[in-house]
Length: 278
Image (cartoon, rainbow, N blue to C red):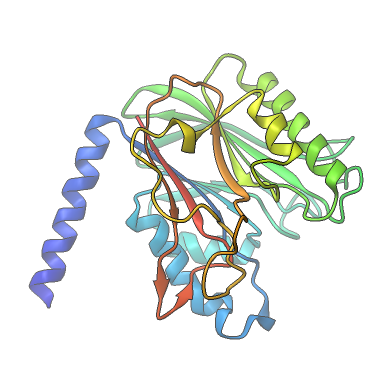
């Protein structure tokens, strides 16, 4: 058993080193479900190891999380040596409420700048926009890839689950803000958009970005739907989590919806979405 484990660890290390030397970068968007004591067998304390393992096993150097409370972020960082995060709580701009944080591997990436804005008519202050039920935020990071020696931007967000106008206007605001922040630089936009591929918010985003799933050189792996609701499988038609890129020439090597289980239990009520790029 010990020998097998050491061999597997060595193999993963070799794979990681190979990916690093080629300049491969793995991005992940993952709604980890807030720490709700009423979730029973799906409580956070039963899932946190699985969430961390999902990111570590797939060697995600950039992880955009949704619904993450500050305590959950700290739990993950304890299990993910070498990672740091940017982001603030949506309820007070500090630690209160859900974050849309970006976790990044400091061994590979250098943080150059970051910030958070609210999805509303007043994005610079704590606010709730349009017909949204809750305050919503987008967190961004300007990162330098130490291996590829290139700078890129990542934006991570979570659109409102009720307000149709809010989702559409949030998409337009994201496009506007990314243009202001990144200009002609490469940018990845990820998150839980609470919208299916044929709905208005995704149409707005696709006017400016390409879906990494469509750019993938290898056929998409895993189910199409990304929401499972802690049920026995993902819910039909519920693809609501995405990774987009503003540069259609980016090499997306692989794209996947990660639906692994632990004893029949998913790591979250959403599946993680992964894109490996070069």
